[in-house]
Length: 196
Image 1 (cartoon, rainbow, N blue to C red):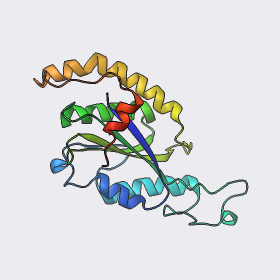
Image 2 (cartoon, one colour):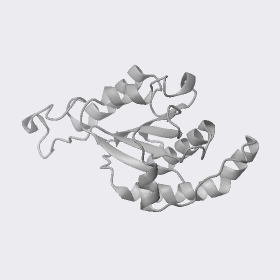
Image 3 (spheres, helix red, strand yellow):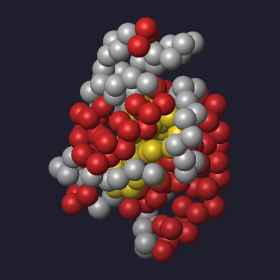
Image 4 (cartoon, rainbow, N blue to C red):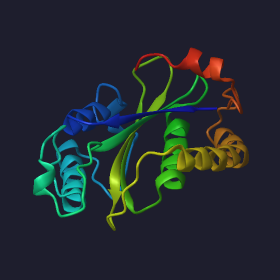
């Protein structure tokens, strides 16, 4: 089963978006999707920046980019600009097409349809993996702090989805030789956690 790594982004959000949308890592940009955001690096950056600045009342740049005195009374400066998730599989576990389908489904279940999420499936390593750029605010201004509860809940739903649909997708793609790992120990997950 794919496993997830979470990273909080405190600076350089544009670099993250450009990395996620690097065409050298995603063949012809075939496996890119956006939830309420564009799939072009400049436009996606503007989408994330606009949402962040509207609700955080500070610039979408790096740490210490505004003084607390510049914020509305009672507001604290939020240092996390966005979240970066990496969803990895074992080498040969899934095709890029199926990995992207799993990634899009994971994004919908984890963050819904009111939060900007950029999804890109990278094929530049021996293992196919998804990258997600996730807005800290949804389009109603609700802040998400990256706690594990939504992720754990989503992983449970994703496991059910995989069990119900992955084998159907694989047979439709005539990829019966590909298997989906259903579980793995922490040690197994750490073993597959190669540098991306």
